[in-house]
Image (cartoon, rainbow, N blue to C red; front, side):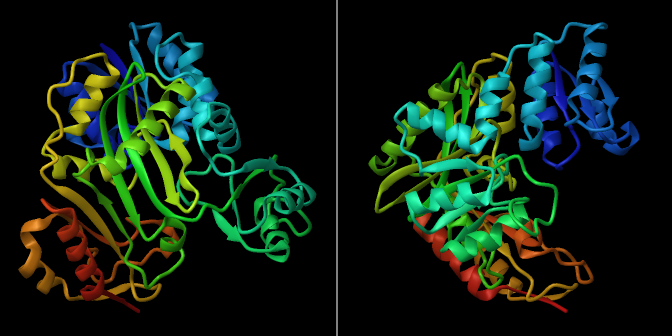
Amino acid sequence: MNVIFVEPAFPHYQREFVRALQATGHRVIGIGERPLAALGGELRHWLTHYEQVHSVVDEAGLLDAVRGLQRRLWIDRLEATVEAHILPVAKVREKCGIPGTTARTAWLCRDKPSMKAALRAAGIPCAQSASVTSVGEALEFAARVGYPLILKPRSGAGAAGTRRVDDDAALRAALPAYGLGPGADHEPAASIAIEEFVEGHEGFLDTLCVGSEVRHEFISHYYPNVLEAMRERWISPQIVATNRIDAPGYAEVREMARRVIRALGIGSSATHMEWFFGPKGLKFSEIGCRPPGVGQWDLYAAANEFDIYREWALAVTGGRSETAPSRRHAGGMIALRPSQDGRIVRYEGVERIVREHGDCIVAAHLPPAGTPTRPVEAGYMANAWLRLRHPDYDTLRSILNQIGETVRVIAA
C-alpha cells in the first residue's frame, strides 16, 4: 500500500508509526511542516517521499498536497495520530476519496458537547453538558445542574484549558478567559463546553480497532485525577496501566468502550477513552480517535513485550494481528516536578531509586543541570519522568509512591 502519514517527525514518537508502516511492507509518504533535512537520516530512510507544507492543520494546503500526490500514484491510506490533526485530515480524506475515519466521526470525537449528545442518545452514561455562547447561558446551565462545574474548550485535548468552578462568582470570573463576558482577554469564542463535575476515580481505556471491533485494549489509572495533577506542584502524578484487564471489575468499562466505538462509527483506528467511576457509577468522559499522549504506547510496549506500533500499522492497513500483549507486567510512569520555576540545579534520591529498583526502570528523562523548567500545567512529560514495569500492579504502585517521596528535582 501507499500510505500518507501526516507529521512524521513531531512529537518524537511519531517516527515509530512510520517505522512500523515501512517494516510491514508499505510505502510511506510523509507530509509535515519541517524541511526534509530536519527529519534525520533514519526517518528519511523509512519514507518513500516527503512533502513539506506550511501547516498540517491548514485544510486547503493539506488538500493540495494530497491531491498532488494522487496525480502521481494511488494513495491507499491517509493517517494521522495527533489530536489536532485528526479532523482536518479526515476532511481531506473524504474529499480525496481515501478510506478511513470519516469527518463526522472525527468531529464527534473532537467536539465535546456533540460527542456527549451523541453518546447520551445511544444510552451511554455521561456527565450533563452543553455548549454555551454567553454568560447568561452558562448561568442558566449552572442553575439547572448545580455546582461544581467544569469549563473547557469544545475541542481541547486532555486537561488543556480546563478549569473547575464552584459558584456563580467563580463562573463569571472564569468565562472571560474563554472569550465570554465583559473583559474577555481574547476574541469571543463561538461557544465553550460546560459540564457537570463528576466525582470519582479517573482512568482511561485505549484500543486498537479493526472494522469497529476491538483487537487490542489497555486500561490505565490516574493517581490523582488529571485536574488536580495539573495544578499542584508538590504532586508527582502517576499513570499506571494494569495487567489485570480480565478482572471482573473491568467488564463494565470494556463493554462501555465497545458501545462508544459503535455509536461514533469508529472503524479501523486507535482510540483513547477517558472515564470516571464514583458514587454515580461509571461515567464516560471523552474520546480521541487516536493513540494516547505522554508516550503511553511506549509504556504499553515495554510492559507487554510487543511492538504496538507494528500492530497499529497492521490494523489500519487491513493486516492480521501478529502478536498479543503478554500482560506479564503492569506499567507506570511518574512525573517529577521541579521545586520551582527556573533552571534545574540538581537531583536528590535518584541513586537510591536506581539501586533499589533499577531493574524495573524501562525509560527515564532527567534533564541535565541548567535546563530551563517548564510549568506544571505543561503536562506529565514537561520536565523529569520515569517509566517502570513490574509483574504485580500493587507492588508497582508502591515503588512509584516511593519514587514520589524520595526523588527531588531542585531548581532555582
